[in-house]
Length: 132
Image 1 (cartoon, rainbow, N blue to C red):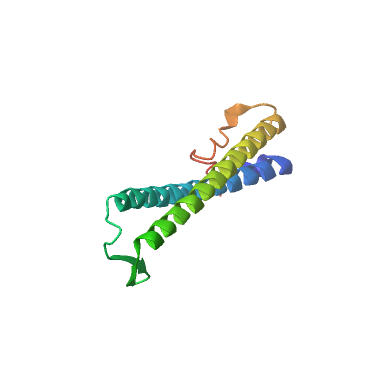
Image 2: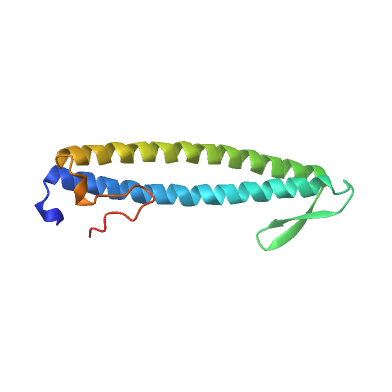
């Protein structure tokens, strides 16, 4: 069906498909960052209930290396901070992709004479265009 579309409309559809893939990638990265942040916050909460003289270990690859309380706390706080920044960046990127998607969708509808009856892309989280 896409062969009957004007070249400009085909380009817009391809751009929409690319944005949809980008949105999925960003969503996956955001989910990973949220998970890491939750783990760091949980570990910091647990650390509060541990005596500072307790022997602790941190995992480095397949090894466990002894560490002290202050270093463990510092490492977790740094990890938490980095993940918060990463999450904020991903949320902004997610918003930009959504705005681009909506703009391209409007442009495509204008190119096709406002005909939303073609069943175009359903958005970054939608089922896509099904074209190949």
